[in-house]
Image (cartoon, rainbow, N blue to C red; front, side):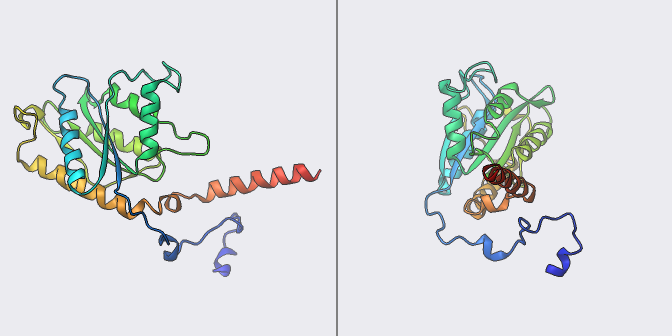
Length: 240
């Protein structure tokens, strides 16, 4: 391997790590139930994104998950309130608590709703040394009033990647959502419902697979190099 590194003159060998399978094994695997935070993107009295989120929650709970759903009502607009606003603090605490998330938005004007985006925007990339979303799993879903579309889920995928989350391959898009729920708010049997089951099952599996090694999975050479350089500067300054 040292011979190969001689072909990489730009590499800092002090922080260049070779991935090995042993590093994916933890000596103390988690025993608590996988923890999931679910967000939905509508405040309507009969919100289909909320109803779909409730269905997802029931499935995750049936699989043994610990599930919390954030109510976006009274959440201020991003930058429109201090960070210690009660709803902002609630959301951030839940994001830090969760090991996986589900984002479910209606599609409005060909995009996710502002309510959905506001929730995501309030979750910072970092709080001090803590990154609330990095390495956590994510499933994305959307509901539409018309024909099936994937604009909202595609946008949320981009956001999940930006927030360094492990966004699972499967997703759900429910077309003509007003036809897919009964009068009690429960989702009717359909291929759409079966897809939701598939997505939650996949999310649960990915969360169990990655939650104990997430920090290793998202560890970056560039950040290790930057940290090493900063440490070197501090040490050199003290020695002057």
